[in-house]
Length: 225
Length: 225
DNA sequence: TCAAAAGTGTTAAGTTTACACCCATGA
DNA sequence: TCATGGGTGTAAACTTAACACTTTTGA
Image 1 (tube, each protein chain N blue to C red):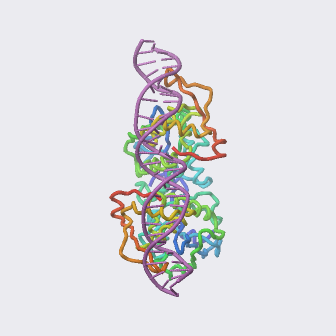
Image 2 (cartoon, each protein chain N blue to C red; image 1 turned 180 degrees about the vertical axis):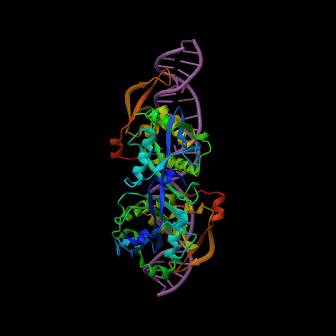
Image 3 (tube, rainbow over the protein chains, first blue to last red; image 1 turned 90 degrees about the vertical axis):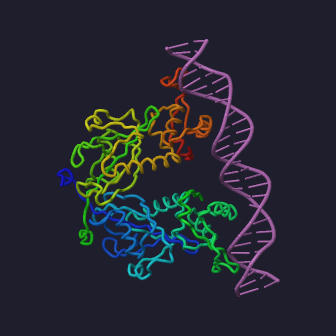
């Protein structure tokens, strides 16, 4: 142990998770009513404290899994929020991560236990501390990333239709996309593979189901939407 | 004070600075020989510990100022590095920031005191811990940002020539740019203002000096290089 | 007078956008 | 049979890329 190190202060480090889900043409966040003081009962991001036996990234994965039961989820670090008084309880430095999950596959029982709810991203309530700012930054980071890397598929089921995919990207960008131009671009991505299955849930005619083939993508990773 | 908070561990939080400078057509980093254990004497980024009386961002500014004497420097957070054993001394979670400075204007006396040196970014020596990874991520983040926001000017003097500016962007991107196409794009940015001064240091003929006008930029912020 | 760097426009290629109708099906 | 959402191609507008010579001046 170095004297130099120990002359410096230590801090609680927390994780906050911006959990994105996509359903029925809408982006949603999984938010919860905080169940401890301060700000007990107010809307909050899912959070937790980094422990001794885990890296910061692992802590983020753990915190996400505690709420959703999910592992191997796509997560990205948004940034670290370190204002002195950001938490009125005591000083906590927080590392924010966003997660993209398939809204059909989380553990509903766990979510209920935490008193968590999906909230439309355009109708976010007041959030505690600097969580609103975290959401804003997460959304921007996600949008930017989604335009240049194929991360959007994490928000969809394994098999998805082109109308679904287009709706997802329209929601992420907050603007409509021309259907034929969209499909032209998708057609050029040979890692978005047509299956012989049809999804009839959205229309009488049914839409062809596609799959994102990550192995094929990795051989020639180019993506732009 | 909440019991819930205090049941969690605390950590040393450090700052590491990736300090970019541009000189003679080359990007450089300001690196130093670490003057305390562990890894004393090895090449390292400038760093320091976050204190109780400062935000994380302020700590980054302080650490940069301690080495360079500079304030009001353009800085961006790169990310937080939280692997358990990233520092073999004891556990330290580090927040990395990059800074863009005008290589003519730092405090050379301070830099000498810290035993710091400018190193060409393509000839970076072995660095301690995960500093190499921080440099890689900082460089990528800076490159991306520099392509869509006018941050490159922070690396140049107040007055600069178009050959200088082009050389800077060629260095940032690691590829050559067509001179006429480059100048065409610059000509469309009315916040890059021609002055009536000539810089004769680079050629016999001399090159016109330009200035980045931030106020004009803010009125219609569009930038793409 | 010549070497060295600064400065200047045009054309072709590629990319992006706009746009309208037919198809398949279940109710 | 008709209402609903799924599926398909082409042409114009715009953007990007390629390219070569003249100017100025100090040595």
